[in-house]
Amino acid sequence: MLSLVTFLPLFGALVIAVGVHNRPALARWAALVVSGVTFLLSLLLLEGFDPGSHAFQFLEESPWLPGYGLYYRMGIDGISLPFVLLTTFLTPVCILSSWESVQKYVKEYMVAFLALETFVVGVFCALDFILFYILWEAMLIPMFLIIGVWGGPNRIYAAMKFFLYTLVGSVLMLVAVLAMGIKAGTFSIPALMDHPFSLVFQIWVFLGLFASFSVKVPMWPVHTWLPDAHVEAPTAGSVILAGILLKMGAYGFLRFSIPMLPDATRVFVPLIFGLSLVAIVYTALVALMQKDLKKLIAYSSVSHMGFVTIGLFTLNEQGVEGGILQMINHGIVAGALFLLVGVVYDRLHTREIARFGGLVHRMPVYALIFMVFTMASVGLPGTNGFVGEFLILLGAYLASKGVAVVATTGVVLGAAYMLWMYKRVVFGEIHDGVSTLLDVSKRELILFVPLLILVFWIGFYPKPFLEMFHVSVQHLLQQASVVKVGAMVVK
Image 1 (tube, rainbow, N blue to C red):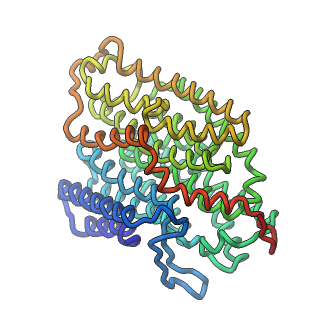
Image 2: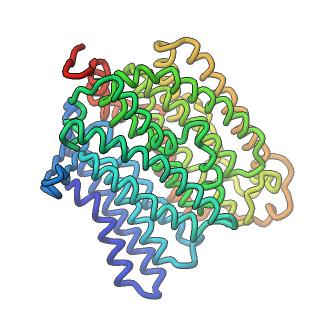
Image 3: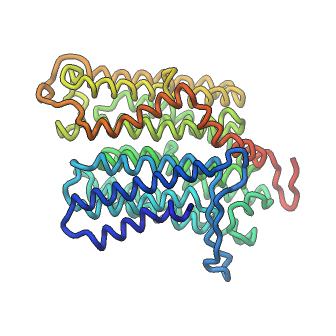
């Protein structure tokens, strides 16, 4: 089942690439059907998943290159399952959002998105470190093409910057992966979690992994590729970038750095907190100065992911669970905000905030939807953003009161730049060009309804989502509390 969910989109991409010629409508429908079926199959994973167990489930293993210790290992636990579901959920949303906006190389565009889905789901399911690394790197290719071929005027620059930043970090991760595998005699992720490494070795490996994961989050100061990538990417590219790809770095910390290198993790906690606080405050201030809608939301993503990294490295239940939930929330809310920008960009062909104004008079439904997701981004009680931020700040307070106080300023600044943006875009006098705009279409409404449901569902009743990964988080924290030095493994 896990391999089916992972590789069905890639199989669909190959069928579309080979079997569809000069029929863009067929390519769109085929991609939508394949991604939709993949999402339904992923719900079967949820149905068969036991949240009361911290063990990896739906395990698959077969020899790949056994002479080199390489095996095809797949499995999911409560930490990886929500990201698999988020990926399979957002992919059909992205494809449907591109229905009218993408008119050139439609077949290739759909192939790229389906291939990207396979590689990303594979990253969350891989239980072999080499397999994880291959899928991690493979993801770069379709995302590079999505930005570089279907992006804006400076798409080549943005695509190259995205590619180079990620690739440089990944090279150091490869060195760390090989060092751990050779040292432990296995690339099995569950086995590496239980293997003791010396403190010095852990520190060097942590730095190698940190180089890659921090770029992908992205953490300050290696975040500068993200605003350029978002501005130049097509709408669906921004949705998948903010909704899924940014979560891969934080997932790496959860899956590798914290459980495998717990002693080094504790050494670097102050550094992580420091960089995260700078990201929260600095990028929020930068967001206040933005004139482009996409750049503002991109900088807000860096600020929100700063909250996530703080939550994960509090190493307490509230903070880690809040961090995971906030990753899911950010994927929903940031994805929706980029979709909302895409709606008006398709009509006015501009993202400059000063060119908007008075949208509420012409697009009242749009204004209402925009308001809900703006409030969710701010963290209004009753929306999903509040639950995640509250848990993170609670965990941060338990870990360090000073960190919690500084992080809270990010909530205030977040409200400032989001409400300022909403006021200028939606209210005021009707600007030229706005007077002729049509409200959201049925297709666009279909995109937003499931996202709106999730905003209020998690906001009012987050229990099912927290229960999904609660036991796995407890086990993760047990692993993080174990001192692994040399041959000694003690509490």
